[in-house]
Length: 314
Image (cartoon, rainbow, N blue to C red; front, side, top):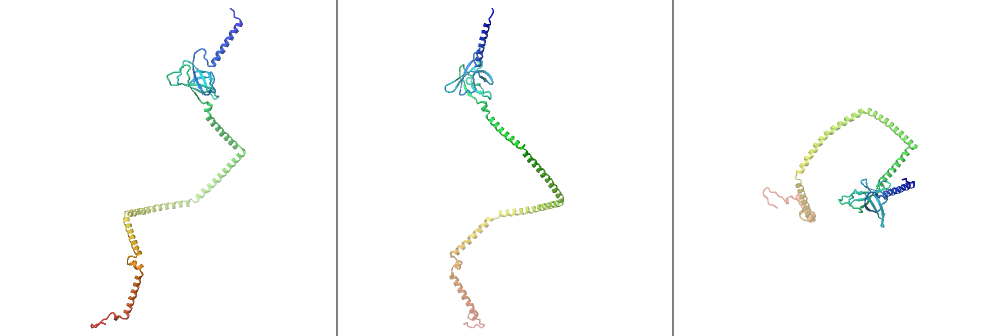
């Protein structure tokens, strides 16, 4: 039987439409020819995520995002279709992560350690990881600082390449060369001066050596003096200084007591110093004694008489 061209075109068109539908379904994450398990997760933000994005475990794809639905509270329910040959523990974490610097997102399953597996239509725990751009912000800041420093360095280099600056550098090097030449001449003069004064320098060194020997001798004498002083100090420390000081303090106290008694009018010395009557009596007695001596000289016979033959006294 011969097939007409119209029939061939119709069959080809139907096949094309079927392939287009199947391809569209596959791109939306719908597995047409095999069954799959559906899991859900609720996210506060799904920026960068879209239907048909892969679901990964350690970089290996086990499924796709099949559906996304916005809720009235602003959260988004995301549906995953997972190949049924992979068992998912019920404490698995469905993390929304960035896959490149452009903000493209994917779902990464961090498998839990539970021995109980999640059933079809279960809701998994959700988490959102910061984007790569956010994680690279510190590096970006450091790069900006490095660029600023490089810009400053280039500006300094441009100033150095300035002709006026180069002229100043040449002048500086010329001044340094002149200074070095002057220093070389000064060094030669110092060498000549040292050569001429070498005899005097040798004499000074000899005198310094003699002084050093004398200092050694003086040091031995000083050591002897120090030893004698140490012996004297030791003898002094072993002597009964405390008893001597106590006796001296007692003598001073007794003298102070005697002085206090004199000041208070006790004793003959106090009367002699403080009572003018005793002074007057002593003065009168001295006058009478003086008159007695004068009368004794003038009339000795009144007081002393000698008789050879035992004569009668007057």
